[in-house]
Length: 114
Ligand SMILES: [Zn+2]
Image (cartoon, rainbow, N blue to C red; front, side, top):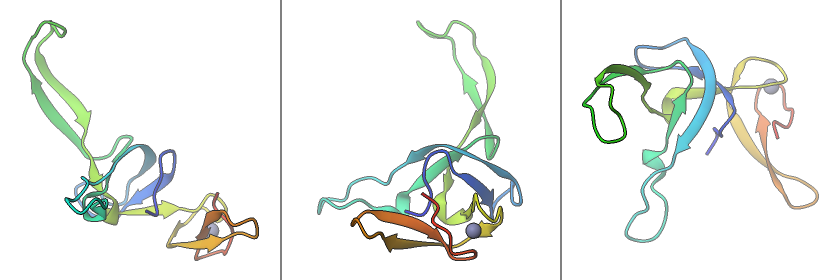
């Protein structure tokens, strides 16, 4: 996947289109019956993006009920990684380094991202 936790991303679709934020967590797709991950279901939670209201009931742990803002997940296809080098939304490629490790590479400036 082109997006990882801690990345800065640009939102391309939805009510927060044009906003940027940091990826708080990745919600990986469910595992298919065949054992592989379903990448069509990969989503991310981005700080300050896709805020939804949750109506909470009081329970044993949570005694205070009410309407709370939460960050809902957004599909990774609707996010573009902002390259830390050129600071622009960029497509991401993969490159195998000399030591055999894989790294993401910015398709705009050509720099390695991590
Ligand atoms: Zn770049």
